[in-house]
Image 1 (tube, protein in one colour):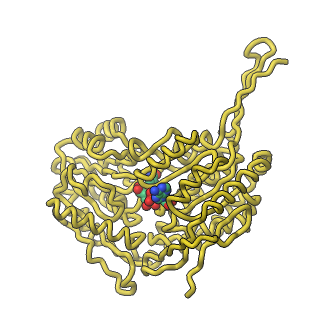
Image 2 (cartoon, helix red, strand yellow):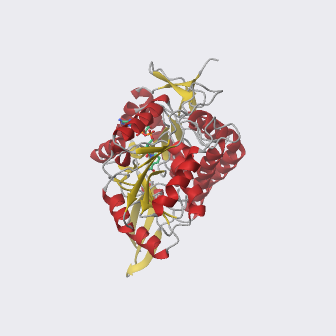
Length: 485
Ligand code: NAD
């Protein structure tokens, strides 16, 4: 089969890239290349930004209630295409079909949330008669064209943390999907253009990696950038945007702890904890990475967690019954496997070993089984580094205080922390003291819905305003008018 070569969307037209740099994107379940991704040239990036900047001048003047109608159509189209999109998502990312359906649900939820925002938070305010004959008003004004830079792990949900808000508030966008999983967004770009019929230039798309991202920040008419990805790149993007006086929302990597106390209800907790560590094959920024057992809770949780993890059925995400899909790429598989070897070298004990996972029908797929280490200590690399795969490190601590201390200081990240306990006092203490932007209490994947900001602290987040609902203030500026009559 001739692999499809992705196109660019610039000013409402699909264009062949002139780039000579074309890289494959894969179906990880089969280990096969399924499309070629041309890394956009500088001129192509400029053309996409220019078309967004040009369209902005008319788009901002479309009444907001008309812009909302595009979002209603967006919601309808995404809902009617959801199952096909979920299948494509699984084919390009590897996650199970059920997980892809969850990705779509959150994608659409952000369209709902942006519609709500348009009717509520986009309003300004007035204060009449601030002095005799003088009134003051504040309006929220769109700014121009924004760059939306995406990671591989939620090919649709994460771009939609931003796109519907920007569009409904009167801005335009240039989206750059991950070069590893660009296909779902490519399909959605077609839908936005041909079914939702967004005016040409409101939504543009380019492809590529580091060079394209730098260009997407540096083009003079770009007003700001949203970025979600690993911490080293996040830091670089934040600095680059800041140096040029541009706004940014920048979410980085993670190394999340899940704490189990002796007061935990293990029957209820184990399935949630297993899903936290191994859902999406551990490639979620909210995934558990370190399981921190307080005192004797380790004796209860460890054998049950190890058994349930080893029992997860690994396979093609499209096959019914698959509980864990492959990891996203050969490079990811090699990196994660390297960490398993490192853990053994560091003296941790393997209590579930996923290294030999094989799927008979797909010998070339990028499969790894669930892996659990016990006897991990905070200074080991497997406890500190973001592995971003199906590898759990179990650490034992003496008290909840020690667990919180470790979470707050042993790694630089602050994306997610969760606690499993039946004690309200422990839960409250944890919630108040832990330095993480998304906190779970008896919840293993505390993913905020679109109506809340998606949190992140310390090296997991750079900036002030967060994705999702916070982006109202990110995608608008305030204009204050004082008038005398
Ligand atoms: P990544 O940092 O490799 O890539 C993210 C994006 O940055 C991609 O679009 C990529 O093309 C681009 N990029 C890569 N190198 C670059 C460079 N040197 N300069 C500029 N741009 C560059 O991340 P990934 O592997 O796609 O995604 C996984 C990472 O994302 C993990 O670290 C995960 O924790 C993080 N993540 C964080 C959140 C969050 O909300 N905090 C959510 C999802 C994923």
